Length: 88
Image (cartoon, rainbow, N blue to C red):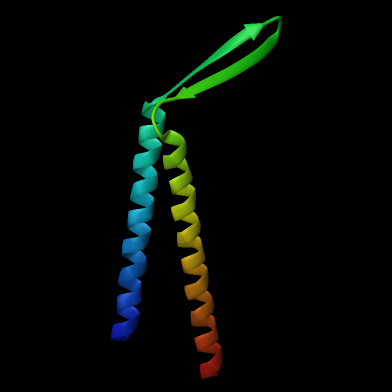
């Protein structure tokens, strides 16, 4: 493994761990700050939930960071495939 490949591997691992850690923390925060309930009126079920603070922003950030991670991984996989193809 070359030095450059090792740097990219470390970068990918750190990015992956940071993204997943952030997602886990936001999931815990969301479940702690969300209240929910269910009403049964005339055989119909109505569910509701209420969030406090900026939970919608945090949930959106998890989607954004997850999408950025997926695009980055896809681009690096494509780059690696092209590089491998050119060596053949």
